[in-house]
Length: 517
Image 1: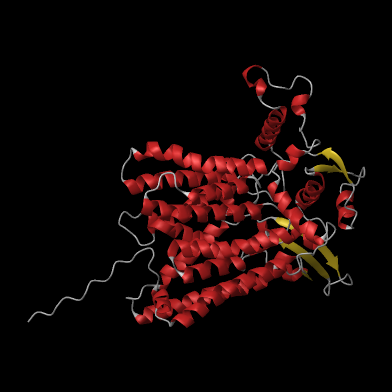
Image 2 (image 1 turned 180 degrees about the vertical axis):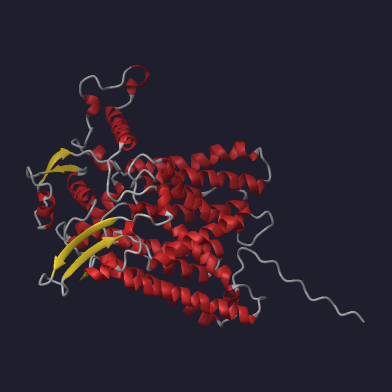
């Protein structure tokens, strides 16, 4: 008598979790509910503590806060970025006056701003709430954006994989990572770009699910929402436009692939464009409402002066629109011709290798100075990410490329493609900007996709239910050890991210590579 063959192993789907996810599903409903809420709540609490506690220190304008914090306040008061009074021969006088509480030394004259206004309006909300002279208010909105980014990473990771484990891994790793922390504790714009870009990505995922299920052509509210979110990203900094380009192309080819009909391309391109781009444009223009509603913004009346006004066929265009177009052209010309040198500039290819993180703040002190208990001390704020998290994320990204390149079907291929598209949208366009100065902190726009890639790799490493128990146990302890080491490294690097005064010899221990100094 021949024994019956064993039942076939069920095919794994990209919505199927690891063996730990399977164990999760087997828990009583009450236990699942507790775990479902306790893990994200703990991660969000960690994100809040690392981003809100002590953000008022240092109480001085740091790095490019000299542009964005002061511009935020004049935008709030005047409706547009305005110039500030200066003291001849003292470049830091205005910043010192601002930090000391003298926040009304600005003029009514418009200032040339090279980034759209939305991020500055958002920074101004915190300043309005806590007062413009309070450094907590300068950075509050950025910190809130950083906290929300951690929560959104968990939502996106869960939407991609349906795994609470992946969501917890991704959110937890971002919550304790130095790049995410630093970019949530300084009044810069890039954290807002990251938040709105990831929000647009989430809406695109929702649109993918709904459209692939229903085959809808025009009835696609999530694509409209994606346009609004990505328009907001572009209204903070222009690199948000690249997310519109990449995600828009993704939706078109995803629709065509699902239909298995090449001619569908002719329908989907105009439809997806009309659903995505005009909404983004409306949001972008709305961010300039203060400029349009007032009279003294930079180039606000350019078309009214001299012979600037358009003639011929385009003469009917309102002068305010003509002036706005000219202002946008001048901003584009500025970015195209920007060749300034900077000691912390770093090309996009070097970001993946972590060659040159950005130093935002450094103050040295000696024995007897406040907070210094050694012969020499220093206080630094540098966006060195958690090295283990960063390099492991890059390795996970390579793993996703391998997953996608395989010809045979793979349980991870669909989310891998999505994550790689998100990463490429935030990173690849900067490779073309090799002549202009770029900085490592721009990487915050695509770091959410890196930690999601790492979270997916960790889940895959844990193995499936059918794996041997001893192998599962070994891998579990390896993952636990990895996470514990990541946490320990974050504690070690905390002074480098928050401007704490520590002995200089201790600071030196954090500069693993000479170019990190």
